[in-house]
Image (cartoon, rainbow, N blue to C red; front, side, top):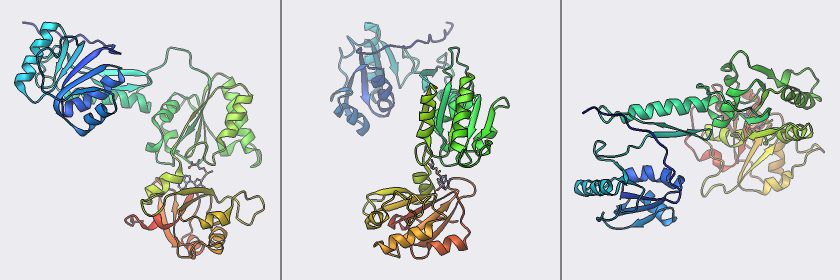
Length: 410
Ligand SMILES: C[S@@+](CC[C@H](N)C(=O)[O-])C[C@H]1O[C@@H](n2cnc3c(N)ncnc32)[C@H](O)[C@@H]1O
């Protein structure tokens, strides 16, 4: 008899009864998607894994703690049979057939009347990959095809053009600390779709090299204005390109709102009536210490961390930072833009009560090939920065967390 291919379909299960028999690893893997589909899930199993139990405790599924019994599938729309008892699986499968309930079997794809595809999502589209025939099924290959499609769509290496009109406007994208893998999936996708990218020096510069030749890349630092005018020049460039109907990405280091002047750009775009999407990024304030083996909090060591700009020295009248209050804290201080002022900062903290032997680490160019870490104390950090010729961009971490991890090489 000729073997016909399976017919692919999407089941709309909201509020419809789905019976799952067996509460082991198969159920654990399949239940989240059934719950997400809004199915009314009845799980029948004497035992379940801790994760499945948590779903039952949270009220996401109903759990009857017993083996399968004839009649369980009578009013179901769909069934997943995955017990470790072959006889029960066969009996349940026969019952499903009698009641015309589509049924997936984890133990016997041939006997099943439905197969679960390997699925993934990208931009609100579900990618489902199904082996078309029972013979020669290779679930790993199916999953690999799914991964290739979903990953490709997410990172922009597979481009599926939108045939709806693109919303012209600006996406303010946090690019993360520098490693190109540390941008968000959404950020990377928007970058792949951009006509114009206005980028800072910090962040994932390597990603710019991957952009197609037709994408205009503008170096924000090279806009033809003096230092004072830089932000105005960036705002004008964003507005000008967006008004031409282009998709513009403003790529920033870390997170756009952590010392990134992101809100100034959002405000300028709002005043010009240009739509703006903000995509958060991984801030260097947490990720750079982490990449150097320093947790910003640690149980029993630091219950708070405070991120401070070192751009303006503590004795400068423009400073808005209450340094004496920071010196009284016992947790972690993370200082950004502080290489030039660390001497004064350390002096001020010690003068207001932070012990001089508090550990300090300075991490330069974190998450990139040039990453290096210099360790010191509040008493010695200014000298260490000079001796080791530490440069920006660096994150300075002050507090006992510096000493809790295994000391990394370099
Ligand atoms: C203008 S702030 C921007 C911060 C950024 N928005 C963020 O969330 O990470 C620039 C400062 O961030 C820190 N920084 C950013 N990326 C860094 C990296 N890869 N390694 C070390 N420090 C970094 C440095 O302190 C640098 O002077």
